[in-house]
Image (cartoon, rainbow, N blue to C red; front, side):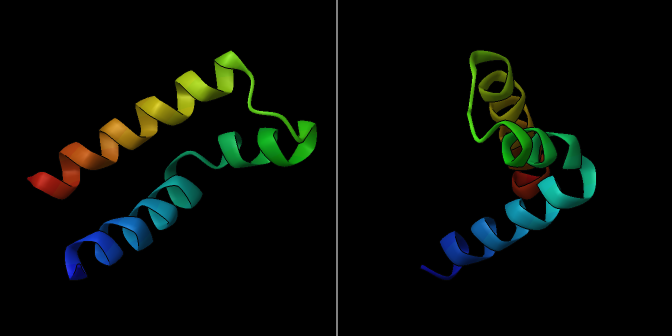
Amino acid sequence: MADIKKFGNGLLTFIEDKHKSIIDAINETKKLDDNLESQLKAAILEYKDLFNA
């Protein structure tokens, strides 16, 4: 369970620091279109690789 919490908190920080444009676009449009979904998935996979390293 601790790893899940650590992953979730780290992911949020990672996206805020490295992919703020995704958050800004979601906040601005209030939508998660296909393009933003793709960017978000890529960011999650990028963090997952760093987390597992």
